[in-house]
Length: 184
Image 1 (tube, rainbow, N blue to C red):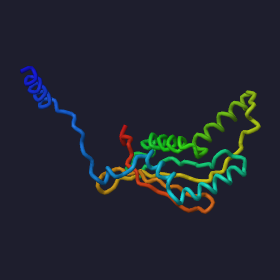
Image 2: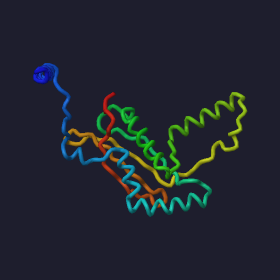
Image 3: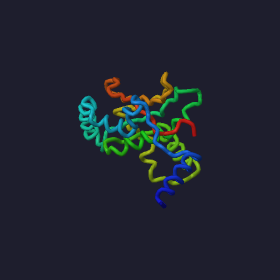
Image 4: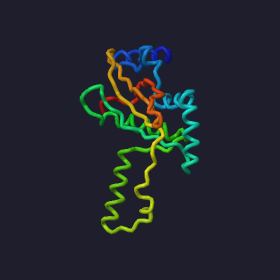
């Protein structure tokens, strides 16, 4: 009898408040990758595997630990609100690439900030033991870029690309469903 009342009570509460039921996404969205899955797919791509082997050899020959990848900020072409809304997607992409353990990751914007911090400290009279390395530049082997777009169906898509700096070719791309909310 208590069980029956519990079921009736739960049904009444769901009827008044609404129950949380998972919403199904369209098949076209379900089949898309997340940012992390896209980076994982990059590592198994046959073209990338061959290019990475060459870049890793060149890095070792130059005394570097890993090939260098520059990740450009993700462009927002989904609406007119600017690139600030793609900041978290950009961070998620950087983290996923860094966690592969296969790259030295360069963030062009943070590099500028770091340079300004070091030079302003030196200008203010600080002693810096790191000054002997100040200004050394690691040329990228690869450049990764992304563009957020809104498809005709209204679905947001993140188009990721990777270019080989030596050949200037796009050799990898994926369409990703961003897991970050668009409007914060």
